[in-house]
Length: 110
Image (cartoon, rainbow, N blue to C red; front, side, top):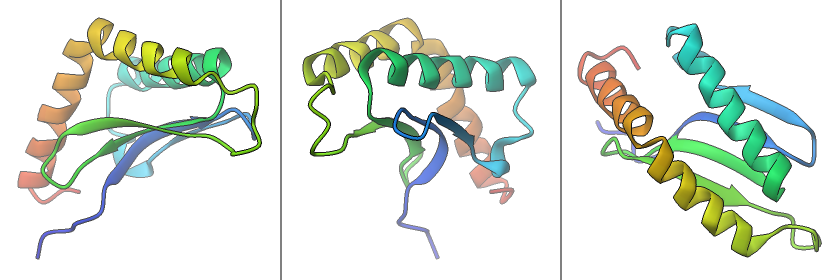
């Protein structure tokens, strides 16, 4: 049976000043893990809120942003611009992660 829930790859939280990498992806090369950490932490330092990178059930990688309703410092416009910048500048990385996830899922490793 297919799982309908998204699988979180990683994320960063500006409110708790924490970074998270899903243990299921610890086998990614360290350089990729480092790049993901830098990407997520830089995003929340620049914009605020919480950023998660999630695989949707069909394998697409999405960047989800959440913010506290009372966070008046959260930069909504900056958030949209930063996400577009990440999608443009890190396109190859994001596509490679999607391919990796689909291959791992097809192999039954996830």
